Length: 220
Ligand SMILES: [Zn+2]
Image 1 (cartoon, helix red, strand yellow):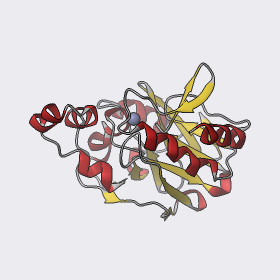
Image 2 (image 1 turned 30 degrees about the vertical axis):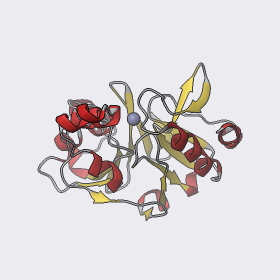
Image 3 (image 1 turned 90 degrees about the horizontal axis):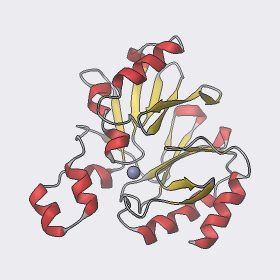
Image 4 (image 1 turned 135 degrees about the vertical axis):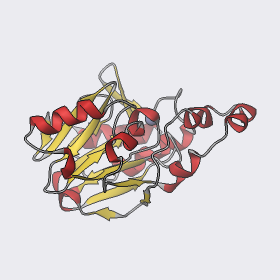
């Protein structure tokens, strides 16, 4: 499904990945382990080849977002970009996760490590879509980022937002590391001029995005 010119939402198991179909293609998130076939089918469906994927940007290091990084990047020259706070969090020992009774660390333990990744940071502008801005929105995970394509007024929100009963709301209390921080991060999104929100787990929102984000930020 094309959600903006050259930007495709690729439906995987329980999550959308996004394919930016420029000459050198970019994938935002990868889905769970085993998602390669589905991504491949989509890529072929639009007449492109997997070899044309040059980079994978990870919104955060949860298994439904980065599980398939290795099988997609694999032995090829695919650059993986991720906030260092999440990459660091993946190297956790089971013993420590259990001892700390930390749900985030347990999730991290069961997440397939993506291997090497290039760190991205708040305010960085990546070259895709005429400028894709990294907005660090910690809380769901320490290294959660949103990605903002200013020319398209398109915001990839990762898991910083949920949609429950058709209402946009804060990140999941069950799967988030620090809810107060996650709520506060919505202010960062509300400061942007957004026409379309591309959620990771729900269809995109195309109407009233600015109002929705500002209302939510006011409730943080
Ligand atoms: Zn998540």
